Amino acid sequence: MPVTNPWLSDPSPRRRLDRHELEERILNLFSSHNVGVLATTGPHGAHATPVRYNHLDLSVLFTAKAGSPKLRNIAADHRVSFAIVASLSGRASSRGAQIFGQARVLTPADNDHAYYFAAVRWENEQAERGLPLTEPPLGPLVVIDPTRIVYTEHWLARNGYAPRQFWTRSAGDNATVG
Image (cartoon, rainbow, N blue to C red; front, side, top):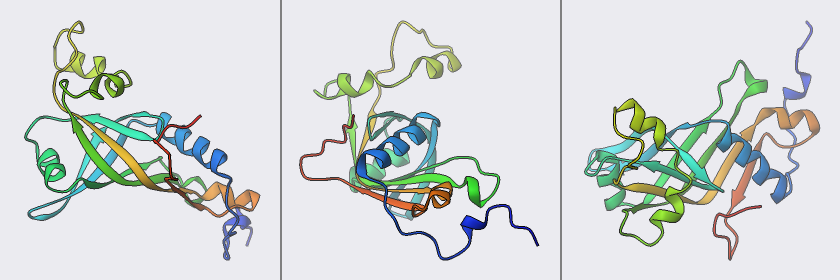
């Protein structure tokens, strides 16, 4: 029987991308999608919520309503996971990232808020809610600073690379690349 993608057969390659190439692929994934799933832990166990996100380099950003379950969970435990999944039509097109890190909740009074908020495309959400585009929202902004990213792209196997690649924060990294 003919096989469409014989390079997907086991065993998978084990070769790693260099750090720069891996970061470029992660940034491409972040830039080509805008919805991910935030996983937190709360009093009743795991809580996974789809959210519309933006990013600034490797940091994931999203706005949230004050007092929401996700913000209450983050206040209790800053460790989070965030998943971004590209649509797929089969194993060869499988691509996504699992981001593990610490979440920070910033308000407009925080020094870092303006820096990160500049990367948030808030106008669409304001328009959807019938709010003026002259006034950005003043609610909390969540910043996920990654400590580890598991990037999956099965197409990498075609060129002899492992389909699962691992990025970890190095000493001195500030999630800024490029």
